[in-house]
Image (cartoon, rainbow, N blue to C red):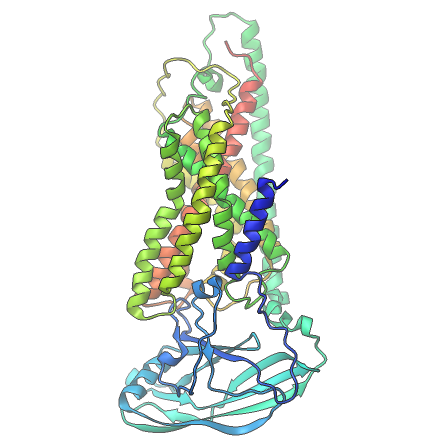
Length: 592
């Protein structure tokens, strides 16, 4: 008998293989001397603007005959990779010395185009037997001059390849630009250019299985690891001190509360109740906008599940350096497969809150995160098309994503919603809710939502602050991040601090006889997302050299979506922790 779980696993395997995360084409080739080894030119772009990349032959390089585009997986296209056959011939163990592959007279327009590229620090990226090659296309000579009109611009015209091999396999490739073989681009005039390259082969003892280690090692260098572990220890100490401090206070206060309320019950019945016991008839009154609340919980639960799955894949080594587009593929496929979780969570909780229109709730759940993401994508894709950048998705890729959403995400969302509606679970409230709500007493300004959110978000953010820089430098730069074990520890710390600070603030809110804690606990839990977005502003202006409308819009647009996702996910964690706590304390006392 085929179970739903088996079908889901089969569907996931099919999607992963179709989308390309299981790299069946990953290079494991063996070559004989003189065999052709695949070399692909990928993209060029300003070094400081990682999102602004263009096709290699958008610059007026010599275009060889019979240029072929490499067939790419979904994740590679989403990553902005556009691989085409490169102009160099690097056959296995075939050495070349100053081989000319092209002579060309550069027109004034082409000289100006190259000069603008050199001025913006354009780099190129290629792949040789699936190993990455990086290099700059030219250099600017300033020679102590401060006036940009006196700078000299040069294009590199000779590239030196050094390739290491072990037996019949390629292990490593390095490319160096010859600083003495240059084309002067300073003046607007026609220039003759002869492009050449040299190839040297060396034998190495490094086994094929370890050829990607040198890229992974860059983020595991001793001084980097020291900073990471300092970050972890700093966060752990903060968490232990905070949780110990708050736990001591809360336990002592709660113990006193329980003793006081027990004595009150034994004393005169006409004694007026105070504190959080006083509002026992209102604390489980369902929140306003219950459909939106349930949809937020559903989306947050789905994003939490997605994050856990991504960590699982990263810890087993799927996202090794330069596994092109693997992360994007995983995000698309796992998000599609986990939509049933969002539907089930939102629909079941909405029915527990005695909601009637579950279909509308399901539609809201489906569009709560995807809607803003889709609108952001439409705007940014339009910008990329206007720039003719590789970040602009081809029509075929957009059709594939729409089909995944239509044929996988939506049906699973609906199935999850139907299962949630039919679960017929009742909301577990340990005390009865009164017919009419009590009036909330006037509270000082610092007990309102925004100051409480600021207090709740700062502490979890301080626990992840140091690690954020490395993640940003990887996502919005050219650093490689591979220490996923440390990142996972930081994530666990983030969850613990978020849960604990939300519980503490919820207690103080109830102690002040404010019973509208549902939305407040969600907003306080999710407020870390707002702090991360504020960090984006700091990172953009103080820690990066990004510039230009396209890069700026991509950075702030997609980071807004990521921070919104964090808001939903951590808001769900905060509310779930607060709900457990509130149920526990009201279960521990006798209420009339």
